[in-house]
Amino acid sequence: MKPVDLHTHSTASDGTDSPGDLVARAAAAGLGCIALTDHDSVAGVPEAVAAGAALGLPVVRGCEISASTEYGEMHILGLWLPEHAPELNELLTEMRLGRERRNRIMLARLNELGLEIGMDDLASDASESIGRPHIARALLAKGYVGSIGEAFRLYLVKGRPAWEPRRLPKPAAVVELMARLGACVSLAHPFLIRCPAPWLERQVAMLRERGLCAIEAWHSEHNGAQVEQAVSLARRYGLRLTGGSDYHGANKPAVRLGACGSGEIPGEIMDGLRDFAVRQTR
Ligand code: AMP
Ligand code: FE
Ligand code: FE
Ligand code: ZN
Image (spheres, rainbow, N blue to C red):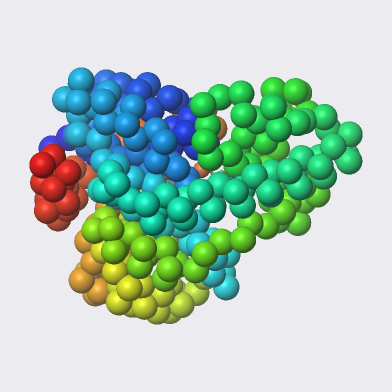
C-alpha cells in the first residue's frame, strides 16, 4: 500500500512549496493521498485539489489550528473540511488578525535591536497566514542569521527578545467547531506537547466528548515508541489514527513528504477513515 501524508504546509502558510508544487512532489514520491493543512488558512486548498485531480492523487481539504493549554500550544487538525464553512472562515480570519498584530510587535522588537525587517519582507510570497517562519526566512535572507533554526533560537522563541505570545482559543472550542462541520478532527503531534502523560490522557478524554475523532500517531518528530503510545491511547478512547510528516519545504529541510520518525506513514490508516474519504469524492 502506498504511504500517505495527512499533514502538510504550503506557501498559503509557512511552507515554501506552492500548493500545486507540493501536490506534484507528493505524486512523484508515490504517495496514495495527501492533506493540505496550512496554519489558519484554507487558501491553498483549491489549487491543491485541482493539481491532485490532474495527477490522480486524492487531496484532502484541511487546516491546522493552534489552541492554548496550561502546557503551551496544542495543535488541532481539521481534515475533510466542507467547502462552505462560514463559521470556520470567521475563526481563521480572527486567527490571522491575531498573527498580524503579533508580527507587528515582533518586527518592532527586531528593529529596536537594529535588525531592519519590515512587513514587506515577510509577505513577498503567496502567504495568507504569516508566522514566525516568515520572520526567520527574512532574517536569513538579510544575513542576520545563518539558518532558520538559528533565527528561532536567537530571537523568536519564548524567552528571546522578539518573542510575543499569540492569543489562542481553547482546544475544546476548536474541536467543537470542526466537529460541527463534520470534519475528521485529529489531535496533531501529541508528543510535542511537553506535559505529563496523565494530563494528556485527560485532555484526550475531554476532547473526545467534544467531537475529537482521531490522534495523529505518525509524525516526523514522533519516535517509534511514541507512535506506539499514540496508537494505544487512540485505542483506549475509541479514536481513529492519522499520520502526517508536517512537511514545510525548505523551512524544515529534514522533513520529507510521506515520511515520519519511524519510516513511512502507513497507507493502511486510510481504511479507518474511509467514510470521510468517500464523502469528499461525492
Ligand atoms: P507561529 O505559528 O507563527 O507561532 O510559528 C510556529 C511555526 O514555526 C511552527 O508551526 C513551525 O512550523 C515553525 N517552527 C517552530 N520552531 C521552529 C524551529 N526551531 N525551526 C524551524 N521552524 C520552527
Ligand atoms: Fe508551521
Ligand atoms: Fe503543528
Ligand atoms: Zn503543522
